[in-house]
Length: 265
Length: 220
Image (cartoon, rainbow over all chains, first blue to last red; front, side, top):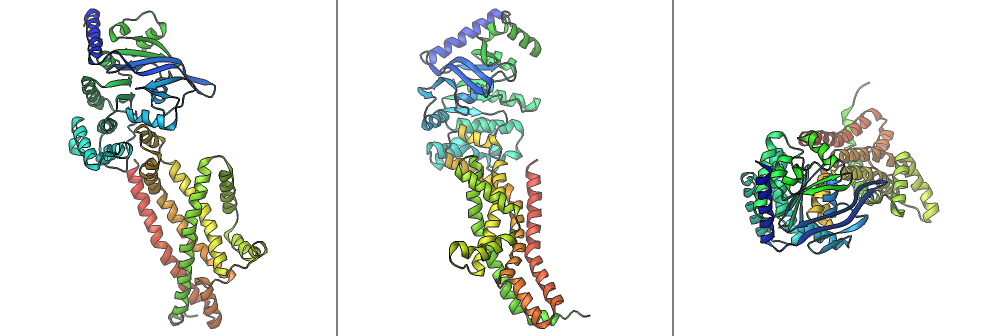
């Protein structure tokens, strides 16, 4: 595919996102700083995500990608700056943190399913305990979501009886069961064997089709190129480059990105 | 020398009454020990503040001195401090509870810390309230890993209960001592005592072993 066609696809995608809803930031991070002792994992990050937008975050390990995601749903505290998610602002009260977490779904690299619960129980727990959804409603939701991610027939198994790819798909269904407005993926395929990467990416691709707002930290550059509206390159706790895929991959001006791409591609 | 089993049969009522008191001591010590252990565990998990300091001191001291000293200390020195004499049963039960509590505190803490951080993070990321995160995610997993070590403490407490004979609690060892003294049949009667203790402890050890195998299979 030539660069021009890609650029056209990008602008079409951007247009589609704009059409779905007025241009509005659902996530807005301003001068976000997070330190671990003397080490700054995030150094004054400004980062915005529009409603319906799919943003992939790439970059070398230790660059702050995961920390950014974890800060957005309150798993890491904020040292300076602020985050607003759908009108809720952090730093805020404990109640604000909980409200944000209910609106933001998170998928972890290591799945983190609850091993002592069946797949069904894993998915119904949060809607019942955090949203007060009835057992029947939560069950129906779990069945619908699990068959959507292709796990419908394994609903009464325990996580250890499933493959890594299946576990990660359950984790995606579990996050979706809260009906979040934003989904965050923290290297969702990094812990998977090569042959399982695709089944998980396929589920994420289908989510892209539903217009879900997503921020995806990934090392799968091919996937980022095809699925993202915008790619963000993070390095040393800063956003070094931010561009639609076509422009991102043809970037030759930022030496850090050029060096990163040359190592990966 | 010959082994006269009829002595055992003849003194069975005394031995069984002693066994009954042994079991009572163990049950009281475990019940109170679980409560003390939970409080001390909470204190240590807090990592700072007065409760943490008290809990750490309590656990360290109790684990560092013999149970017999604790029991004698409470029985003989208790009256000087409390101004009232504890019954021998109360002194034995309370010292055994303190002892069990210190060991259980460490077992509870280790069990909770063994639950991977990703579990609480996943529950929090889903917005599940803290109460349910503990009740449905952390504690059920922690309890499973604790079971073998918990059974270990139960067997320890069963064995330690024999010390209560020294302050006059009429449990198994005490009764055996009395009837042996009357009949001079120490050999038969203390063999019977050994068999009684073994019959209590062996099934527990088997249970712990079986459970450890189950756990080993589950955590691949």
